[in-house]
Image: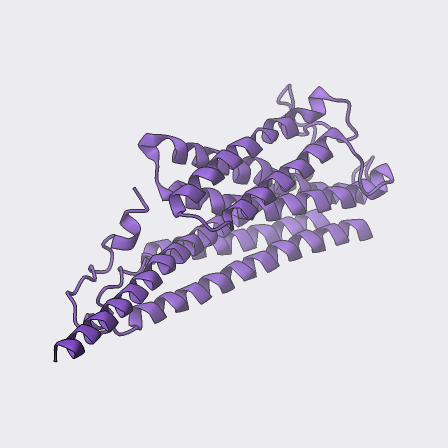
Length: 64
Length: 261
């Protein structure tokens, strides 16, 4: 039975830790995005922020 | 929003999308707990394998996710990226996400199989066709992940990665049919065998099925989160670059004004 328990523990722990790492990575990136969005624009320039939900200009080229 | 001039719109996730991800995550956790409960406490020991049969409730499930769902999806997504009519970095991101999750499941497949093999075959590892081809698959997709870390333009990276994914995917049918093509230690298919007549019944069959469902849900949840990470990473790449460019432009404009004054 110890092989069975070891198998379950190793597989489930690996999946759990990987899942936890994914959530952590995602939260870190969400915070980084929020920081970039909040950053004040340096100097005058035409307002070019599309409304939320519109495709981002930086990504539209990449998504073709 | 005037403070955010020049930065592309952030990749917002809809409320529905967030709820779907959360719902799938909860369903995956519940199904996994049920599988463990049924697998360890409810189902009877096997006449031949004894308690070792309990490993069978998770081992084929993780193998199914790694080989067929994750790497299969990566191959299809790579093909869709290379096809000119469907070319989009969405497919590249999906393939990358599927491969990363698939590698984790592939490691779980090899480890759980090895733990089952030690008391059954007497060895942790045998250079058996099924085991070796699965290990080769892991190495190939680790190579894919390594290749993605080589700095390159997104389109160049996507194209290279797609070719490597398709090359690696050739090993998937080899893994699947290895138990038929060669004389192997590994047993043949229990459910999807040549006669399509499962050789497992009752609570054991239901637990095995639940294990497949649970691990598939875990995979879908991980894929959704990993895909989202890819979207955010891509956006940050362009978003931060835009901020840096605007800063340089502003500096240049300020210097020009000073000189003119």
